[in-house]
Length: 287
Image (cartoon, rainbow, N blue to C red; front, side):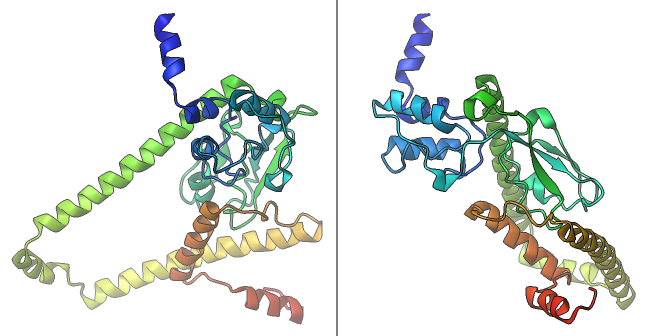
């Protein structure tokens, strides 16, 4: 008992604030995760009413901890709502993995060029997987009825989501450090003479170059065909009133992921500019 009390009392203010957040890691508060938001509140840099998933009860919890009055939720960051569940349309998914990269709690399973699926019991309803999807195949479906905020989310859910987010963050940092170490080791091991000696072995013959070009062209054709099928499906959905979702108030982190994906597509020769889309629409010609 004594050890437990000591640990509680020595926890920083930011740590105690973080304990009261729902740990959806949704970034709606304006910060990249729950922990940075907690630190900003502790430092007086952010208000304690910027967490839509926590709702009015979440504001009241933080107000009690901070000794401040309970104030209304700042709806410029979003509204209190029933907890949604991300659902992927398997018929439209092209296996790009961008939703997996965006999920802060590893709630999406899949692999490159394969259909992805959401693990329902792990999804926090953060919405972050929706904007990066290039074919708009993810819908957020309310699953808690009239229950909103903390009524739709338990402390056990929050603790589990927090643990998954921390494991994911640690894994990403470890993989980055390992990749940098491997690159540094390769660079250090290769002397100038070795680099010169390796040039003939690395040089490609015309036949090898042509083969690589053919493989790359085939890859581009396959991806372009998949995107074209998804684009037609998206147009059909738009005619039924099912247009793109959740594209407002995209966080800088998610926008950076979208920009990176578009850049990769440009490098593969898969770009289709907005102007071209608009010209096609204006002329009435199919794409």
